[in-house]
Image 1 (cartoon, one colour):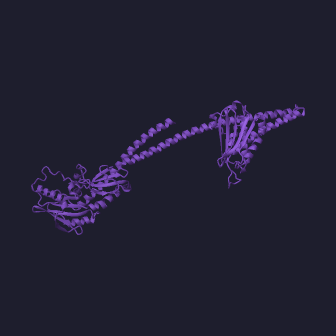
Image 2 (spheres, rainbow, N blue to C red):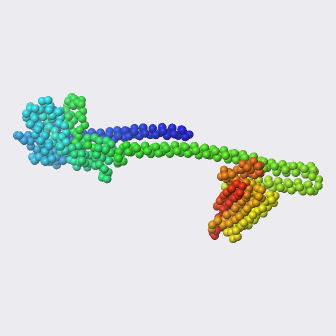
Length: 564
């Protein structure tokens, strides 16, 4: 069983470790997938909103007049679900050698010429550079700027798109650009919480979320409400980039089917974005959560294995005890059978002789009558011990409690054992301390317990010295102690622990064929414990063996008649 539990423990440890690693990978993959979908929805919101301002036909007809910004703005207001997404919308036009900024009124859509905001300085320099490239005819030669301009992290929350698509240096119209300034407040208070609740849902409470600027990582745009948690930094469980709206994705929405398919078949650009969304479990990391679960699983598994071992040990112990009890019961049956056979044989022989008139004179008849009476009393004692033990273990033992004098109990017990004392020619040394407090108990049961100890000393301990000591004295203020001593051969130390077990008989008693059932001391223990007392034994072989009964003294307010 030990080897089996050890093998199971090792296998379970390996299985739990493997399942923990798989669970960690699954949780990370699930979290990363949710964040990827969140990033796609975030960027799609930007792309959809910006594409509403661009031509419905791509590429636009060079001779056509693009819709006015006011009409496009109204179209956007009627179809968008995020009216607060933009904090400013501007139209950049070329006037002479300069770029003029026209801002739209976000309430009416009207245009007004405006100074360039200081935060738009990077965007202004970029558009001026683009205008220079167009005028010098270098646009399209080797495509120096790449297919589309990569995101400029210095632009912050600004997005720009050509009004007519990708500028053509041969076009007659001067280039124009839309510039959108995305509202940081709207992203922080509305858009991000909405997307987080949609994609992470109820599990959001288990995670710490941060959105930082890639240009300035120390600048935290959004953070979960628990401010007492340390910043995530680079120790995130999953992360994605946000705020990525490349030109091809924006113009693809308005392109004809053929061009749309061509744009779709282009290799996907590498992930970019001006913001980074970082997520970490509140416990510190997903690995920490999985480690805690792994520890709990190991503890539960270990507890189960220990329970199995404990159950096996208990089963083995119970089996040994049952086997030992069965052996004792067999010995008891054999002993009782022997004890009953001897007096029955004597009674039968005496009765046969009397009936056959083998005893002719009155003296012989009286002798056989006395013999029959003696053996009958012996049989009665054996039967009464068995019946008392059975009654005591049936949970229905009834005792009539009353205040008792310990001296009177000892005198009655000695008187009841007087025939055996005289037959054994033993001297009884009584030492009863005067003024003993009364004890509370059943007089018949306690007398039987003391008498059993006296008979036990007569049977096993009288020895050559023919002496038995009986003493009684107070034990503190609440108990009275009775001691029965002898100077016989004593009790081996290895047998003392089993001395009060039912059916137990010592090795010497069986070797010397001393009559007994092994129930006397078990009855003593049961009676004394039923009176809230205790019994103990000490033995020095060849010198002194002593049994001590400790009983509580009778106190005021104790009922004099109850059933246990």
